[in-house]
Length: 205
Image (cartoon, rainbow, N blue to C red; front, side, top):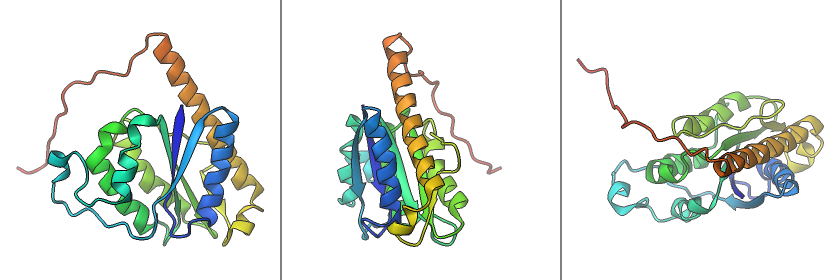
């Protein structure tokens, strides 16, 4: 079993990375393979061109397609972001918009977790905005013993946030437990649901 961890911060090894590494350590301790991906600073937003439907990938060939190519081989995903004005970073929102529009089928049914780092507050909206992607895509949302957040203005301060780091470890344990439960269910003959055809409506009269 493998979990992909996405670092949506412009700082490659900053506060968000520090939190993700704590989650990663807990997953590894439970025997779960991991890969941590840094998406970088230059992630373009969705062009709303619709070309991904025909191409099978995003028309903008960057880190989004690189990550999409990994999704068949993973069982869960953890997305991390810094907190900007009580929201997720622009990079991670652009990344997720395009990843989910072009490759959501590869993530359906796979547990997802969102984490956020901040100096003081605002993580609730940041975490919620990321969890919306999971919630619209039939993905179980993994939680912890507290909201999935760490505090600090730099990695050294985050490492002093004992409760925040413990929350990250609980999250890793809960993700591992859910993945193992899903695997056990498959072995017991419990298959992924077969859904009725989607119904699309609007409110235009």
